[in-house]
Image 1 (cartoon, rainbow, N blue to C red):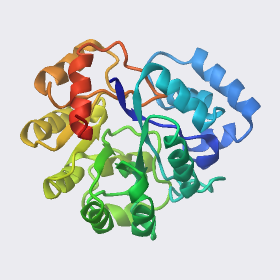
Image 2 (image 1 turned 90 degrees about the vertical axis):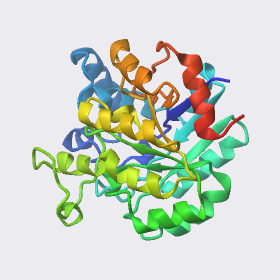
Image 3 (image 1 turned 60 degrees about the vertical axis):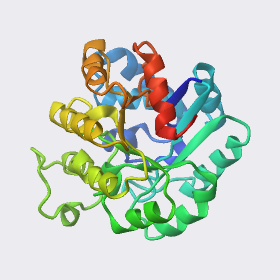
Length: 306
C-alpha cells in the first residue's frame, strides 16, 4: 500500500483574501485573474520556492473541487491523509465557506475514497473543544498549524488530545507563507526569538519543534509527525532528528523539504525508521525520493496500520 501522509485540498472559498498578505488581496477572487497571475508567476520566477512561487502553485490548484483533488491524489497513492486548515480566525479576512462545512464535505467523500482526515485545532477558536468533540468520531487525526494558531502547548489542545487521542501532524518550519495577521505581541510573551520583527517572522517562532515536543512528551500514547523536517532551518532539523531518535511516538515527514536527494539522505540515514513519506501536495511531489518502501513502512507504523 502506498500512502501520502501529508496532503491538502484547501480551496479558494476556504481561504481569506489576505492570507498571503497584500499580493493575495491583489489577486482577489477572480478565477480569470487567478489563472493569469499564476501563469506569470510560474514562468517568471526562479527555481527557489519563495512565497510567490508557492502562491503560484497554490493558485493553480484553487479552481479544482475537493473531489477532483482527491481523485488526482489517488492516481499516485492507495491512501492519502488530508490535512485541513482552519483559516477563519487567521485575522486575514472572512472565508466564504465555514470550516465546519470543509470538514463535513471530506467526511462525506471519505465514504467514497480511501482518505483519512486530520482536523486543524486552532486554539484561538473559542469553541475548539466543542468542534473537536463533534467531529472526533468521524476523523482520524489532528493537525496543528502554529503560525496561524499560536503556541500549540495549549490547555484546550491538551484537553482534546486527552479526551480524543488521535495521531497529530504539526507544521514545523520557520518559513510558513500562511500566518496569523492579527496582533501577536500579547501572545509572544518572552518567547519571541525571531531575527526580524515582521508579522510573518513573529508567527514563525510558534512553530519551533520544542513547543510540540512538550505535547508529545506528555501524550506518549499519541504519534506526532513534526512535518517538513524543519524545512531549510538546519538547527530545527537537527532538533527534530534528536526528538525522533529519543521518542518512540515522534516522527517527521518529507513534505516540501527535500528538493535534493543529498539533504534527504542525511535525514533518512539518521532516522530511517522515523521518516514518513508525504508530499505536501500541491506544493511538491517527492515521488522520486529513494527508500520509498522503508518510508511506507514508517507511514503504516505512524498510522497504526498492520
